[in-house]
Image (cartoon, one colour):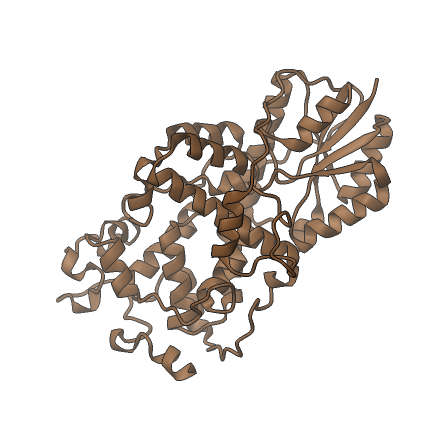
Length: 438
């Protein structure tokens, strides 16, 4: 009997999984494998929140595999070494895995190719359209979103792949115990795993997404980003689900998936953009550790900014509009380097995806793909537009919960004592550092 190994990475699901589908259609037996690589933790890419979500997701993947007659084999160590060892143990003729886009993923795939040779098969499955599939004439990637979107919309999508009802797996290969959630996580993390992803997908109604996704208090975004990051839900399936539903809300969601693909194809072509400016502009950054600490702790004196940072600390997730506001405040209002801000987000975000996090930070900071690098989001105008009644601020800043709408976003105008800091920058000087930087 022929045997194939499936190395799961960021595709922790059975539905619409090209690597798993290829393995089960080309071999009699399949050994599902996940390798916990200590290098990921050493590199700082496995903070407590994502380790907890990963533990949930692996337990759920193992449960689903067992229901199909299989099981997950878990190993610790170098992925190439552990995969080659397992392939030898079960005499596997092929190994299937999803292709990544980061420098880390590329190094892993190079080591796998060196260890396995022609037995290694790479598949798409992390994005709707594979990174590198679309390129403009004379370039290796699209640098601007709008022309990429037009090409993306013209691209036919591969068909969705069913989850296997049964999966034959040999009894022999031993497995290490599944990981447990670590201590020190945010108190209100979402549950991980494919079951939770599909439950959230079924419950989410996209009809109001186009006009409510920026409304901070409405909390009407899909909250599917952690499941997309870990591959508990296929981006291709989500795009199909939205297209089948139709309407402006679904169209708006599909556009966000195109942005996700866009960032992945940029990082695949320019892996150094994870830590260097995509478009260097000679920006003069301000340095003040006390300001940076106040930003991290949600004590800037601007409630709309602080509410977002408090949500991040509590949930390991932040509303997308709040991400834009808080990132702009750090990089444009305070004029701090985007890299420490991106690192703080990556440390706490359950959906901390390198491509989307780093390149969105650069978009806001003016060093990335934005064609308007001098864009500044004024926190007071953003608050007035996206939290007009102050409900979002009151939810996350209990010390301001008693303030009326007219003062909740400008507590310095309130008569009476407050346990809340004064603004780091005076309200009438919010753009002073941007102007001074030229």
